[in-house]
Image (tube, rainbow, N blue to C red; front, side):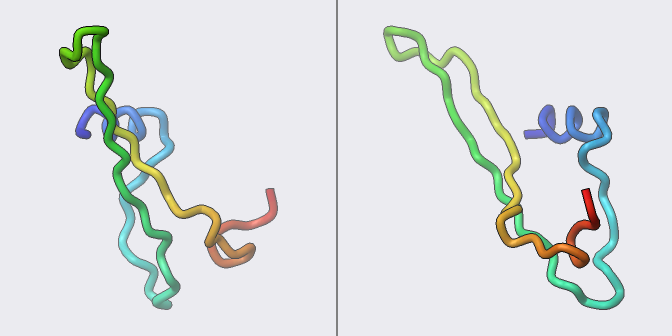
Length: 66
């Protein structure tokens, strides 16, 4: 998970911030974890990504005109 967070931070996608002073609702996020396996079932690679409930965004609150 740390590798994913470092990658997002390096790309400028994720920036840590304090909660807004006006107490607007923050979008919730969660980790989606997966495991890739070889044909015989051995672990080949573990994957982690963070997803945000963007379907709950409100124009003018969570984003401006795009």
